[in-house]
Amino acid sequence: MKRTILCLAVLNAVAGSAVTGQTIAITNGRVFPVNGSPVDKATVLIVDGKISAVGQKLTIPAGARKIDATGLSVYPGWIDGFTRVGLVEISSVNATVDTTELGAFNPYAQAWIAVNPHSEMIRTARVNGITTALVAPSGGRISGVASVMNLLGNYPNEMAILKNAGLIVNLPGIGGGRRGGAEGGGGGGEGGADGAARRNAEDLEKLKQYFREAKRYAEMRARAGANAPSSSIDTGLEAMLPVLRRERPIIMAADSYKDIKSCVDFATEMGLKLVIAGGAEAWKHAELLAKNKVAVLYGAVHELPRSADDPYDTAFAAPEVLRRAGVKFAIVTGTSADNRNLPYQAGMAAAYGLEREDALRSITQWPAEILGIDDKVGTIEKGKLANLIVSKGDPLDIRSEIRYIFVEGREVPPTNRNLQMFDEFKAPPPSR
Image (cartoon, rainbow, N blue to C red):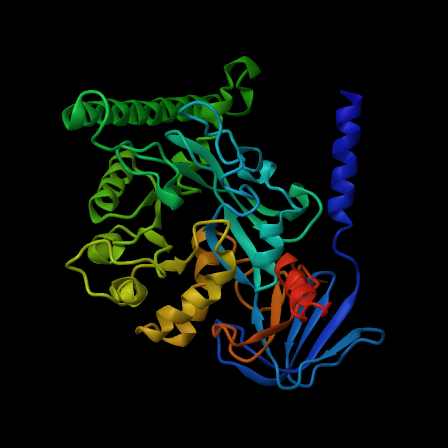
């Protein structure tokens, strides 16, 4: 026990010392705060890992490190609002996959604990401007708690900025796919379609019963208050309390319009706050989602239409359809392998109807609001974490170049394994 306490003390000390007292001034750049108009020839002042001031003609403290951003643009770091980064390294190698706990109900499982801070996938995402990500577990009916992580640090607790951002819940009968990770429904197997439907109905009733039990537990805990004996504490049901109080949402992966409707019906019946992840056909239920104030972590920009009757540009244009309907949404990747393409997905949505300013918000301000971290990241404002990128050219364009990356005021080397190998092999082999 003493050794455990000592280890925790060391980890907390390391995490607390991760952000140094360095002062950095990014000067003469065009600053895009995202929640306001761009400011030309502006300065962003970083002190102790946070944004201290933004504006023109700021007084720069003596001894500050100066970065001349003349001809460059400054943006908030990108936020990937639904991903497996840090949990999956090589999907075909089981030893590098840590997304799923055993059993159907695991509300106490927390994704941040399993994140590998030294993942090459994190480095690859980070070098293209993704500084923050929601890391989601998968599997079972209740997979566990999704966590928001800054993509820099030596230890998971140093990286976590919101350990409990929402509970991952998977409805029976909804296929797992690359985003869902739930147990597949399907119509095959023993008993055929009728048997599968019966099993799904039974599993759905078990899931609802678990939530009903959790509600009874919550009522008991509310009555007992601080006087509740330790013997009455149930770890699993205790983890459900923030969801039942609507302090945190349930996050449900669903792509088809039928599955999305089922998720909305479930959340409405249980009285829960809902966020849809994936949402390939969310545009077909835009009015329903807006009416029920259901946010969408849209991860289908680079996918093909799901129906032969859908227009070819359905996936590209869906973000603008959601915006017009009043649905709060963010563009996400949903994986660990494609995170680096997040800004280009936003750029594609901008090419098919979404205003560029809204495309920027869809990977900065809006995911921060949906995930409940907008007091920390998502815009360039005084007091927020200095998660910033400095780019040459439009960062939503693949031809742009990111010159500087900051996570909590710490500069990140703009390199990864891909770039290192490119530099190593770009020269022609020596002649023999």
